[in-house]
Length: 105
Image (tube, rainbow, N blue to C red; front, side):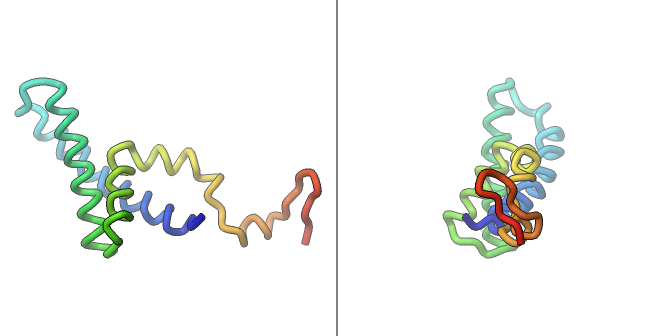
């Protein structure tokens, strides 16, 4: 698993979300109903996340789509949820692995 790429994708999605949220707040008064606001929010999140990934980081289309998806579902929440689980091998090795069949340096 490429955790560095995952963290980078989540970071880009967080930035995209930081742009989308105030934009939606600004234009939601123009929407006829709540379903329109939800649709525009999802579309705008996907578009901005995808665009950021392509323009600023030059990701492949698949990686850019993943960033767009993370933007839609809330990258900041995903990052918080996975924060402890997103350790590189060197960090785990430095801490020492202490479970059944423990590992120590």
